[in-house]
Image (cartoon, rainbow, N blue to C red; front, side):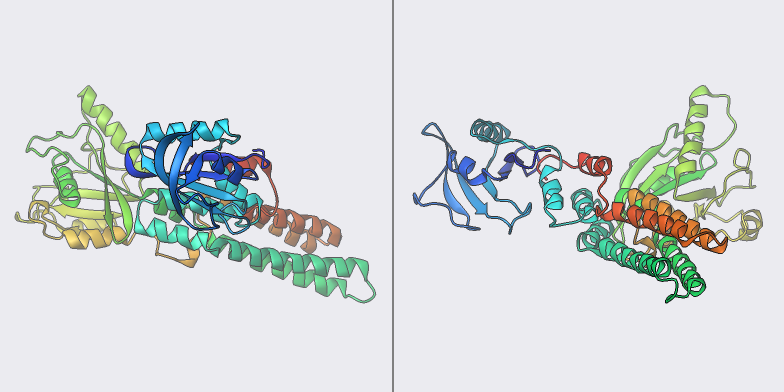
Length: 448
């Protein structure tokens, strides 16, 4: 990305709409805009004031539009930025972009506007990632988490940890440079304690599972014997006849996944084929897919037909459920909870009648209990990239402790502390890694 170029792209989602916004940023931003936009009042555009006019091409009016200029450094990219608010036709947007390209701009790369905001110091790398998390947020919980990250929760946490490491490095340097004035043994002991404390705090803050659940959803898989009531349960939770329900065992032959929202959490519900040994080729494939879904599940829900004459766990010997749902609660109970408690100790069980909606509120509360708490300190570092970098920092801090405990020169511990400092710097972008930065912004959409 050449930061000296003037770039342009559609900032609103592609597709038909009432309004579309074309964004321009760079040193020639205003000059390019003035060559394609004519204000109705004939005056130059005022800073940060939306002005009515027309997009023109060699004197021909292309569209009535509004335009605004936001001069540096008070803009999204900290460069001169302009926007054209036109009608939401993709043919029209394409023509306006071609006009801008002809007048000296170029198409922005994915995430280039936000990348320029990062490179110009308006935001750090974690805040840049939060922008894309906000755009893709599929639930209230994900949106709140992205907002916290955008406001600097991760940045401040990492900045504080780096400041503590810098203090430890300063203490090491003093002990090495002024051995007559600084007690080396006492300093080494303090450094080791500080390293252990920072590493423990970093480990406690890492929760990649929480970030994945916030961004993608809580994966709940319904499993059990054929005709246990899994499909009825899915339909009741979704609120529509999504899965086929019959009295014939083995109706479901494939996994069926539907998304619902509850308590600000996105929940991905998956109905599966009944678990049993079968000679039917198609059903056997369905059972294999059910087992794969169970391996990736956050919550494994075992659905048991409470009216069944006897309990048979054939084909489910290895199943380790997180929750047991006893279905068909409107019929006489034939399975004792004590029997289930003996088979799966400590696993909570509840009774429902899906067609009547009985017990569904309790079931939803039970499912939500498996989601991370909203805003929990334990999920401060929840993105995979952040967790991986923090793990490297912890390893370097542990190496520093080991070096001190083994009586190695303090210079060795200083190398490990510097490595920890750099690893944490990768999270915020203070330690520049071009490959990491490219990977972050490659996931952005064009126009953001």
